[in-house]
Length: 178
Image (cartoon, rainbow, N blue to C red):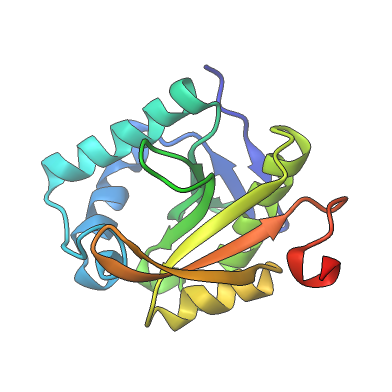
């Protein structure tokens, strides 16, 4: 499957490749990067490889997935962002993870906007969610900046989790409809 490339003002969202792997593995080996994802534990290189392969396979199985985020000016790897819905997920999820030095610069919001446009305009979905572990205030703020509504608090993969929802632009949100 051809993975589309998206561009924003500062970023290129492109297919993860082996050229990204060293930076990707370093990001997943960082305890601060993995604190809010999965079981919260960092990954060794073998499991980082498996993670990257799963994200790439997601494109074939679901028609969407995570992109590598690169700075347009330099090609430098910033992190990952995109859409996924693995088996057992409550809905199509928008997610992101950035290397520590690229946090707090608006890159997650910028990539999230592009991924949401892809979901609504190319995939024609009506709703996308973000699952954010309670306590991850930085990701709560990204979801809110992207226009998400906090619609539920759930237990997910062993953690207390905010379930944020984004709705297609032509569909009224639950709050506006009520």
